Image 1: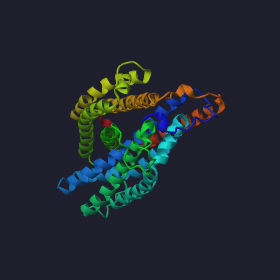
Image 2: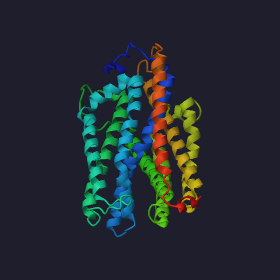
Image 3: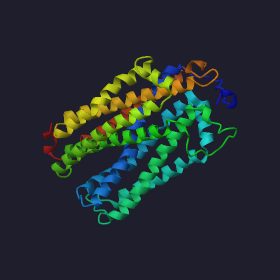
Image 4: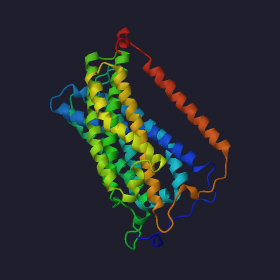
Length: 392
């Protein structure tokens, strides 16, 4: 459909307080921080559900691991929501006419994710309260009721998957204005955006999130080893499980990523590949790391007692996530540039510098991250036994 049939709101005449490139950088930085926690929420719920099924099938060692994921879920949701505020604001600043229009057209589908998030938050607290907690030496009321835990886990996982589905459709709608009008009619709500990339993008998000959750599971295991919590062999077993999950799903992600890549518009795909653009070049470099990442995770799982191999795998996972975000942004800008008849680019924004506000944001961001880092240091540095520091 041509642009003449679609009304795109004009850019805000107030303009931007700094060059668009700076806001793109800040958006990528803050959305990376958001994804690190959000991936645990989404992928962790999937992992916990699988572990609950395994425990129900007789794998007793899966039960305490699922409990640990449930216990970490409430603070992880809080961090994901908090870290998600800044990138949401940057998207509104840079792509407001497209983002807000997508929200309106999704209608109740867009608003539903807030309700589902609140319900999911409550359910994770319920799972935490009903499960055993080794740190508090508390036995859970549902430890001998796996079916109840499984039922609530299914609801929780379904809720987070729905949120991922809504956000995926929102993004697809925002970068494809030709889909705003359904024939000659404007229709809302939209529960599914009929774009060629909707399904592969959703699968790409879910598989990648679960792979990162595997790394988080290994990180929790190392945190418990350093604190001397529980049996060391059980913790190393959890670390190995997390790394194997991450390695297997990273391999599957390569296949899903290829499916996603081939579903893109050919012009958008060729701008992403190679070094035609700066963001596409970063994506291309990290793609090579992503292809080798499963091998590194597998090697780390084999040498599970060596922290250095886990640290390198986790660092590479974060690096690949950052590179994929650069590719995600390149696909957005390339797609919007193809809107007929004139296209959209960030260069169309008028800049009225207001550096005081930008510097204030930077100071608050750095101070907030430093405070979070200090709290994490206080947590991880509390070694309970002298044996905690004996592993490499």
